[in-house]
Image (cartoon, rainbow, N blue to C red; front, side, top):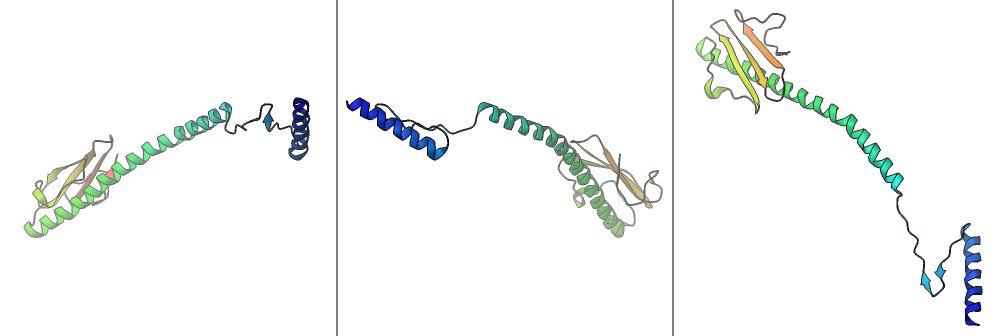
Length: 157
């Protein structure tokens, strides 16, 4: 008799939970153990998230690489502008330009600045960075002009 009573109680609990939640839920298994509701993501949902992250990464990585090259070019231009200041300071003291500034000028990390020509009337220089294939150049004064470029303005190719 106790098993028939337990079954009736179980069925009435099942009907009650069906009416309350709109779908059947069995809160107890015969024997008194409780059924756990397993909540979480399905495999398909996880795969969709991984695919979306992969697509976003494929879009972002080339843009990041382009940003790095712009930063290298900005470093080269900055070093060439600093070289203009160092050369003009040297000229104010010695009334000539030089190819050997010593400690008066230091380039940024990864940038190599080469002063090509220097005279009493002008100078030219170029800069390269080990992170890009582009080269920047600048000149000041006469006798060291670079075709298609304004004096004192770094130009990169």
